[in-house]
Image (tube, rainbow, N blue to C red; front, side, top):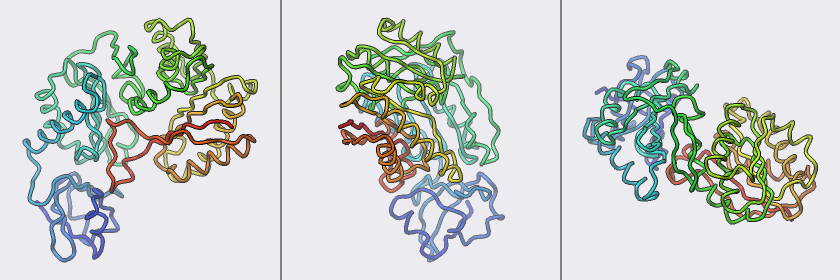
Length: 388
């Protein structure tokens, strides 16, 4: 295994627990390294920091995986997968639906694995992990014995690593229809064609937190996808739920989920552009509004326009709330950090003429863990706000 030397002082962030090394922190000649190969990372004074895989063509040039003295092996990766599974079983002991592996937070950068009952869906996003894919699939089958193993290599971040976009079934067969239990509901899941890997699992804990605020309330679920937020509200006593999404497929699944959970009488779903829907909505129409949009800022260059979009969205949502109403508003844009999102909400409140009180500030679910030394692993912001 080749050695890779850092510039003087570049090790400080790694010593605090960060797992990425950027190209401008490396003193070695990067063209000497094969993309996707493993390297031993050392400081300028020769201290070993660990082993990881390298991609000289990526801004994130090295992702550290193994501590000093440990080399990548079948046993090493098997232990990491087993430890990840043990953690999920501890936090969700009766659930069979959760994120099983969350990249760096589980010591497996470039790998995501979601469990939907006896179906596993995995996604590889880096070249170094792609070279390990045959071993990883073998271990996933051996350790968890799924009825089907699906790969969802269709996220655009793969292109930054020179990887193709593709998806398919690596093992077994998918049933014509799959449902999983989540938040006390039975939800349709499409591991091969659904958004992300089939469901939005990162909001499960936030949806549970919503339950205390919805009894007897009129609830609006914006960017509702499969209706999970609104359906939970209906199941916990909301008097009426309206879900809005621009996708016809999402609205169809939401209606099916409402019917299968015996909630159709209190739930309606409308296919529309969310901004247009809010523009035509009467003021004070709802008591609780959930806004869970897709990422508006997928790059730092898009941040200025994204900020305008978030402000306008939240302004319009606040205008649609009755006095004393509650806005649950989210951003999954990594480039919109905690401070910026709070600024956005202050601007939206000012533009709408509403005064807001913070009820809760939340993040992604416990099965999407966050490393203390890596703020990049915390991407989801979720505010519960009350109109005063």
